[in-house]
Image (cartoon, rainbow, N blue to C red; front, side, top):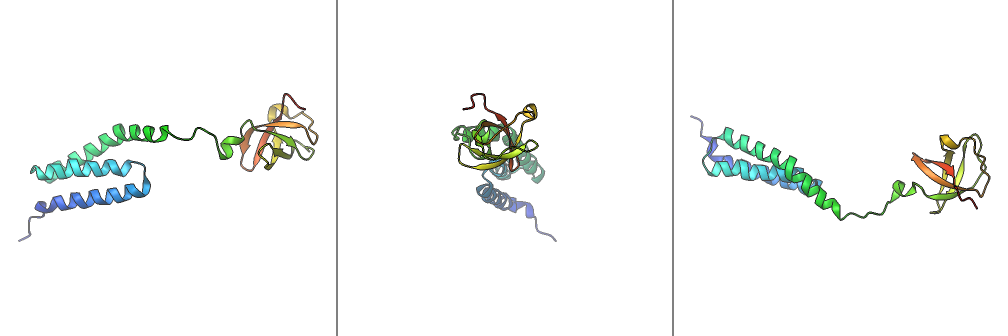
Length: 157
């Protein structure tokens, strides 16, 4: 005769919730936190109230899904609200000024940006006919890999 294992489902729900919490601590995206709450409240709660195993799974899944699509987006929005509004890395290069280092040959050359970096550059499609000499001011319009797309600056000095 096989023992009735349904009396131990509370241990399964606790272990599952613990695994979800550990994974959440690694990922920090609130996904597994919602699954842990679903396991604790839906699964363990139904177990303690004497619900059948299928109802435990159904309520845990329903609660976790509800939390994933309602509470998680709100938490992520609140978490990202206090972020640094200053652009950095490649985002900071857009509209940054610079000077031509080497003459452009067939629309490609080198520019030294105002942040001190030297980049391979090509002329933006709308400015292909522009003639740029060393020292001319340019503005970055786009970053494509390791190349910046530039246009001549309006107020060249």
